[in-house]
Length: 209
Image 1 (cartoon, rainbow, N blue to C red):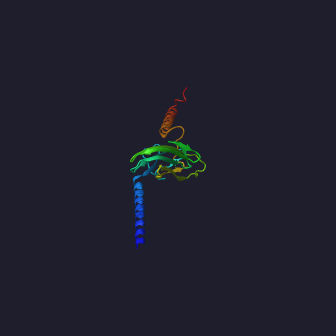
Image 2: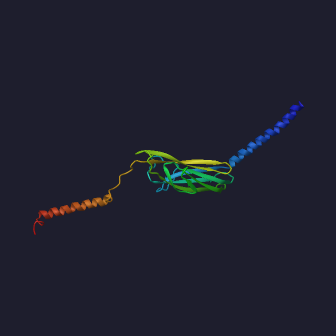
Image 3: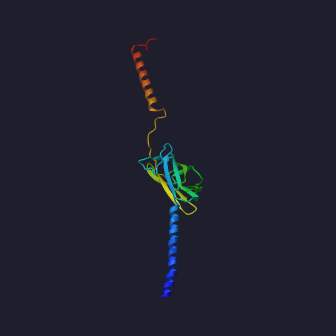
């Protein structure tokens, strides 16, 4: 009986210690949070979107596209040495952005030294749709650009933004002579000139010398 009591006394503190350690670990997880938000838009527009479908916007070959990355500390502890990696799809060429770009991996990388609780940082990137023979002819494809962030303490998050590329001809261009208003004006003047010549010829003005 004494042996059982001694064994019980030895086991109970161990169990409570484990529970206390687990509680402390869960509390630390709850107080430290890292959030990444990725958005996209055509360069001529002002509104950022999480994703763009074929019904929203189509990006023709060689057009430019802008990306926005928000990295925020939503927890209660300071986050340090946050590494950011943005992965470009092979259909998009890197134009500019923070950090260093590797053409081998098609990735842009940079670092945030620290983020205090509630602090966020915003970054802008630009890409261009490649004029590539691998793109489907006269078709539309959708691709993803992904941003990933990882802090020194191991916390990480990622987010993607979708855009759709088309190789179709989106609209017909006007002739090199100019816009329709100028073209219609030239036609009007030509028609009026022919009318004057016809009236003068009928009156015999072009027959008299």
